[in-house]
Image: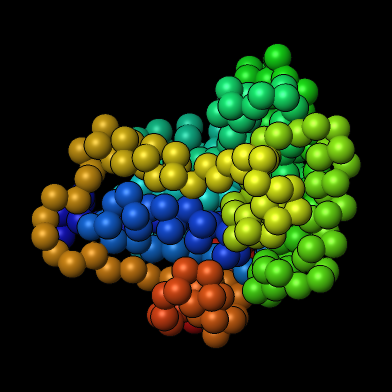
Length: 274
Ligand code: DGL
């Protein structure tokens, strides 16, 4: 098989990265993919960055061994924890990571007030501090961690009263301050944009970075001469360290795709297929 026919690896702590996979499907429909959800360890956002970095290294080794030609770390928390270690560790291998979309938000806000929703670990990382320092000089930033929201989305509870309560608690104080632009700084959160939009009203702009990440993936593939150029039908694999049946249910609920998932397990710091 030609290297350019190999799959794009996409990785998140759980189903959040499916919001990025969806954008990759629409931007790069001919590409094969291999998606890994680390559902044995979700949520990452409450774990120390050091621990998340070790997990991300283990996942990277596995995706490389499974033949990925590029890895998209479709998780803000893992990107914050691991990208700056992974790039020098594998200098010839292309990675695409997430960073909270503060730059477009700062360009688009009219009130000069931007809300960022992300996990505690993302807010603690140097990546977030550098994004704020570089792009948010002229705007005021309001932050919320939305405790419990990742778990609700992992259960498929996208519009239950509890999910609404978590979002209201996060959003109401910043909306009262005049925030008019909201950044989805966690890849799980785009799945509750309909509810966020209901709570905030139509006048508030919500920024899902996934389409920009898919475009960046296409650019990086082109730079490395790795864009698929054969007409073999693309294949898609789904792997989880959690419960494959639960993953498949969510895949259907979130992306409308029916497929099975493979069971992988963490054994002594490495991922092994069951
Ligand atoms: N989806 C992830 C992110 O973008 C992490 C969620 C979690 O596991 O806490 O940050």
